[in-house]
Image (cartoon, rainbow, N blue to C red; front, side):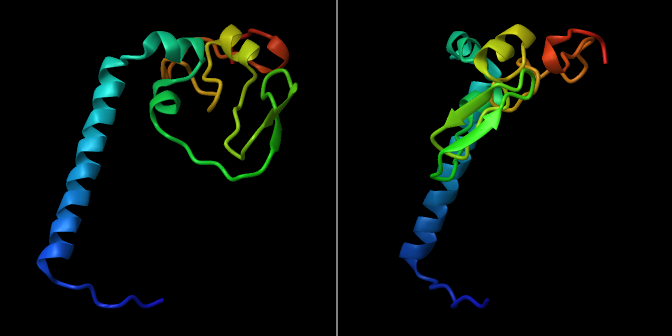
Length: 122
């Protein structure tokens, strides 16, 4: 693939600068949300980690089914952006409903839940 040479004029350079600035400001706002967790109560009600709650996700336009990674109950979604767990399993295990990671992003949990609701150390 080959692209055409870009125009080097005030309008295109100004637009590039504006878009870069917006991208930077958006990243800083996201970092502030990660740090302060302003929607913590709503995030925890939804059983989502900070990353899955505050970062937008895109899915394909197809009805998609996926079983809960813990109990196996089939879940149906309106797009390909699916959740790893059903809400009851997410709440019971303190895992993120969407990605299946620890709800508070703790990598070194002492106990991790396992399939079928058995709560043993792994």
